[in-house]
Length: 203
Image: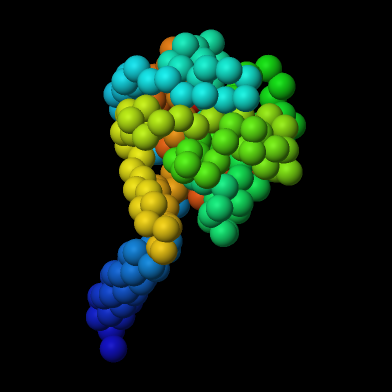
C-alpha cells in the first residue's frame, strides 16, 4: 500500500471514529437526568385576592404578608403522613436559611383547610413540635378558598361522618414582601440547594 492510500485510509478511520464518538456522546448526554430547578419562579408575580383568616396571634390577612417573605403550606392536623413530613422539611429549611443568612426575614405559615376539627389553639400547639417559627392559621371555607385559589392550591373536605376525608395540593408557596405570589416548590426538595436558590432571589 503506497503512502497516499495509507494517509487516505487513516483519514477515513479518523473521521469514522470521530463520528462514532460524537454519537455516543449525544446518547450519553440524552440519558443524563436533567437537573430540575428547585423553585418554580413565576415570570409574572401575581396579586392575591383579599382574605381574612385567623391565627392564635389574631387576624391573618393580606396585610400580614407585607414587609417580609412568606412560605405557605396547606394541610390539616389529622393528616397521617404527608403533612407531618412536609412540616419537618419546612423546619429544616428554616434552620438552613438561618445558617446561610440571618439578614433575610422569612415567615413560615401552615394553613389548615379543616377548620371543623383544627382550632387555632390546636394548630399552634401542634406546630410547636416542628418549629416555633411556623404560624398556624385557618378560617371559614370561603376565606380559605380565596387564599388557596390565589396560590393555585386546591382542597376538598368531605365531612361525611362515616367517611371524613380531606384532599389538598402539596405545594410550598412563596409570597414576597409586597404580598405578591412569586413562586412555589414541591416536597422532597434538597434543603441546602433550595435554601441557596431562595436566598439568591430574596430582595
